[in-house]
Length: 80
Length: 407
Image 1 (cartoon, each protein chain N blue to C red):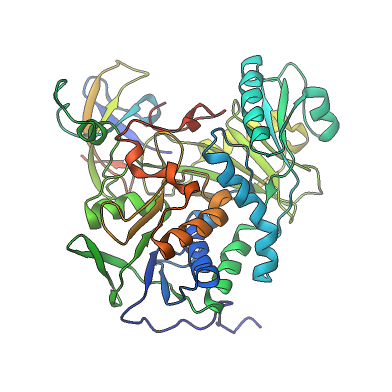
Image 2: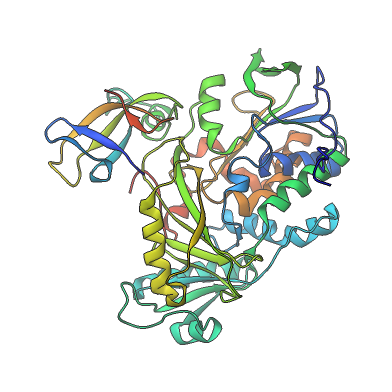
């Protein structure tokens, strides 16, 4: 599927070079004392926004950097 | 005959102000649940609300393959029952669903895959589902068009043969179930959008639609790929779902040559010959969420390469149509079926990924039972949403192929 993403190091590249890393869910819960529900929410649960969402990507077949970006899930286009 | 607009399921009824149950989503799971509620559970004052037209989503986009050779003890019985229900429903609905139990050949391309298949087969046989391991020579005897040469990308070592599986005409199922549900009084409202679900004191009270408000004590959310977004948008309930696009295509019609459904994890391809003679074939998914249902040339090339290595006689055959649909993938490749939690009267049936078609009959039956009695049937209990927080994920991910945004 046609997708172009902007790697902060390498610039605009073909989407197939990247690995999707999930929705941005904010900071990781505390390692100690967080409930199973908190972990479940962080690890598994998604908003599945039909529209613009902030998400993680890794430039797997490139420089390997992890970064966040905004993408419209209804159009499959990265926001400028 | 072409200028008549009255559909099989009767004239569109007027939207009532209240129903005993409202089903969001006029796909196969919604229609099947409506049918079983109306016909077998005696709850006939129900509405199916569909934003587009019935069968718009996954119901009309899947590759029509049915089988019951899943991996875990919780999943296999459900799919087995779904498979057993096709001939029963064909009779009950008095509508030809064109079930063709030609059997499935799941091709294996390594010793490791053969070993994994042995376990799958043992599980299937334990659950009373017919499944055998066969070698490459037997595959060739069963399907002369198959290429078992050793010089292809992934040579065929053998196959998992599942005789009771096959194909069903998916549009016929949509129309048959709609006709059956409407016959027992269920209202099917197409081109009606649910805009909100109202909860008071922890109980479902009504549903807002663009055609007006409906008072109801029960809501079933079964909107396929759109379920997770709707669940979060309307109720703030997050689900462990990623919505990916899966593409499929059909060739021009040919004489009969594929007498079984074939699938290959290594090639990421599966194919069957429809009763019209077209070779319907599906691919893997792009591993990032989106709702576009776009199709791309990448998969035409991918399918052409994969299919012609396995079936060289298809070289030069043209693809006629190509489409895409949404698959709501869960981390354990098993669905979420739950009810009355955390909201009384709220039921959900989603997360089917690309297994929604083959399971719709049994799910409809048991979700209807669940909604009519308020008691979760034993067979559905393992699929509750709480399993993710309990860290009791099901083992379907270790099946022969896994697609998710995590791999």
